[in-house]
Structure formats: C-alpha cells, structure tokens
Amino acid sequence: MNYLKLSIYTLLFAVLLVSCKQHEEARRPISQASGTFMKKSVDRNKKLVANEEEVIKKIIKSNPKIKYYATRKGYWLYYDEKNTTDLSTPKKGDIAYFNLEVKDIDGKIIYSEADLGPQTYYVDKQEIMMGLRDGIKMMHKNETVTFLFPSHIAYGYHGDNKKIGTNQSLICTVTLRNFVPDPAAKPTPVAGQTATTTTTAAAKPATPKPAAPTKKDTINP
Image (tube, helix red, strand yellow):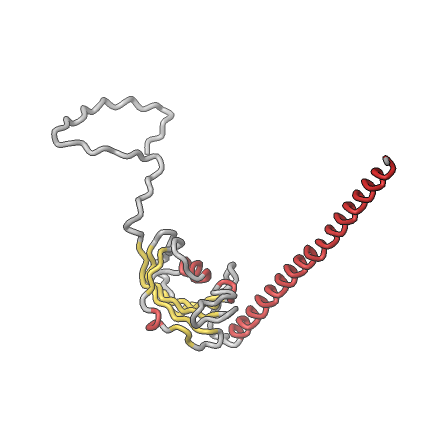
C-alpha cells in the first residue's frame, strides 16, 4: 500500500515538473518576439529620420543664396526678416503674438496665414508643435523666420488629424509680432528683498538712528 502511494506521488510530481517546464518554454518566443519588434521599430524610425533629413539637406543645397542655420534640436531655419537692434527673446510664461504659414516639404501651402489667423501662445505653458515651441524662443520681435521641421518634431506619426498627414516634414514661416509678460503672473521677488507693509496716514514717522562709525576694513558701495 505504501508503495502504491509513493508511486502516485512520484507520478504527480513528475507531471507537475514537466508542466512547469513546458510553460516556461512556451513563454520564451513571446519575449524574443517583443524584443525583435522593438528593434525593428527603432531601426525603422532611424531610417525615417535619416530620409527626411536627406530631403531637407537637398533643399538647402539647391538654395545656395539662402543662409540656413542648423539647430541642436534637429531642424533648420533661415531669416526672411532679421531684427538686429532688439535682441530680447520670449521666455517661459510670456505671451507671444505671431503669424504662421505651414507648407509641406515641397513648398505647397497646407495652412495659410489667413487660414490660421493671428496666433497667441503662452510660452512653455501651452501645447504647441514641438519645433515651434523651441523655435519661437529663439526669435526677436518683428522677425520673420522660416523653419524646416522633420516630422518627429512636427506632428509625428499621427499628423494633426486634418490636413497634415503621417510622418510629414513641414516648412513653417513665423512672424513674431510681439511678446509681453503675462499680466496674470505674480512678480518674482528679488533675492534678499523682504515684503514691506504699507503704513497708515496716522502712523508716526520713524526716528532716524545715528549712523554707526564706519570700520576701516569696510568697503562702501
């Protein structure tokens, strides 16, 4: 009897062991397939970016009279109108007022200035195309700049769900009319400065204290 029980337990243990082993082996191809898919996706995106950049470089090469500037963010620009007197640029929280025209990479208009109308943008506090988000902060008032954006810093894979398609490079011309601080923003206190309380008309003026003698090693401002 004991021999029969031992045989049954041994058989159950063997079945359980084989089942676990088969389950582990069955999961391996899923992990490997996932890794392969990710690698193919990365390689495909790199190839896409390289192809778009090659097209843009051909455009630049075909226009030798225009001075193009490459940026660290991976896009290019040139100045239609440059402001060399007022060199201030928009910063986070400013309100930027600009006009915008959007073309495809072949120069065909997708959205004209009239289509889009005057644009208002709260710098770094509002959703906007990644390329424009960076480009506007490089501009001065009353400048017109044309940007050449690869799709990965434009509207990417999804487009804008209207006229801009999948993985579409864009040519955007921006005129920055003005930018001002946000009047609703609280002023930043100056370092080392404490808030003062306004005295009432009935308050007595403070009696001035005699000045302390200046030490020899003290430098007066």
